[in-house]
Length: 168
Image (cartoon, rainbow, N blue to C red):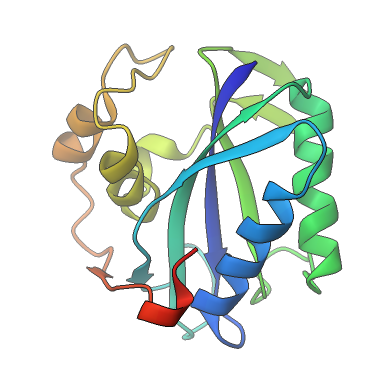
């Protein structure tokens, strides 16, 4: 079994409900066991023209699926929830494979660890909640160290709560 971390995001509709539904569907995927889901975070959009804030979270799973098959399962969940993968589009749900054990991989459509991790507060904040001591296999720094070293000041983020009835 591999330990994998995913980033979840949504800025269309009810973001928390979209993330919970994606998490539930991931838990019903053959070869995947969901372990933990971070708190949700509301974040300003980064790198796109939208003004709609995102709801973001991070999740830890164990999987027997190889990385490409696991990514395919994530993309199937996105499609089933109405994701438009056009660059820069608002999205009902976005599922990114962040880490897969300590594997490094550069393949068509899949790079591990995800290359933007060190630059994204909306990934590092929920990841720090789940696995502060998880080491980035290329940078040889922990998630906590990466978050503390992040120098981008314009990324707005606030931790929120899952509603009582919404617990994932």
